[in-house]
Length: 419
Image 1 (spheres, rainbow, N blue to C red):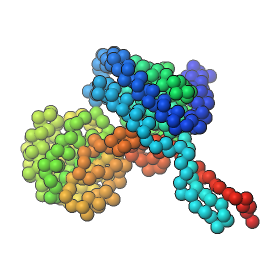
Image 2 (image 1 turned 30 degrees about the vertical axis):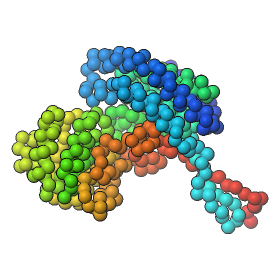
Image 3 (image 1 turned 60 degrees about the vertical axis):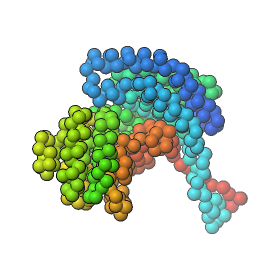
Image 4 (image 1 turned 120 degrees about the vertical axis):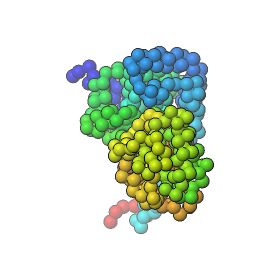
């Protein structure tokens, strides 16, 4: 047995034991842990900032790209958002033990379904130290145990946050091992977690394409995942162009390095001549490179010519692909052909066309007259998210508390026997 095998066995056994306790923990105790962790995060904001600064210095020395540095950065505001996220999760209804779909069968028995924890959740993530807190919060509230494997670029910050989480659990009388941070950045641990079906019930990868593709090849543990965030905004015929400009600007430039950032803008030909020059001025001022189809280039001449590959690319950078379409159906066809089924939006004044877009676009989140940047667990009222799934089984879209639960059948009888 290798050192990595021994480590995953040790972590897994502790997590299994903690998961049994967490499954039966009261809502009050779980909420007390979340509130205690929130208080500790706020109190340790200076220490967290210092740890993050050290991580950033190392990341710059390693020449991480701008998108990775953006995801790694933990600002004062981000620390406060982590604390607020913990408090928001504490306020959410506890899904565990809820019984639904209770019906009386002809035999007299009552059959229903009860929400239960998944058990042990393994989270593998890169950059984003906030994932440490978000994942822990959702696993605690949903009665699960978590094994967290963060990236080497955020090791100091992740260690500091994990220490605060474990102290908060202890303060609330819950097992510290309900949240464990893997104490090594050895990449062999990723493969070990992917195959640890004896200890891990579900795996949630949060990272770049290479990480997800590796896990898709190697994992025997079921996963909640998305591969790319190739997100679209479509501006429909007759759209409010002031609204459209604001949404198209925000969806692309509010943050470049996130999976819900727009990567392709589609514009109906009837509004393209008026809207595109206005947007080009906005994007140029922010240093965004525009890559357009032939029609778009006739309107904004200095665009780079878009290639087939541009429609399939998640840039995570100040680059935007633009296509002019002649109908709603052409926009839907483009999205369903090239989208990663993550998040897509329409800007329109027409209710019937909005409904057509909502029903026809095959994505985890579909928005009407709003920026794609809203596709996020916190913004959707989930308190936080453990990840985003563009799969169709178990969970889809931002994954919050309910996505970390399963259901089992429960039966209430009155002495009935089967004849």
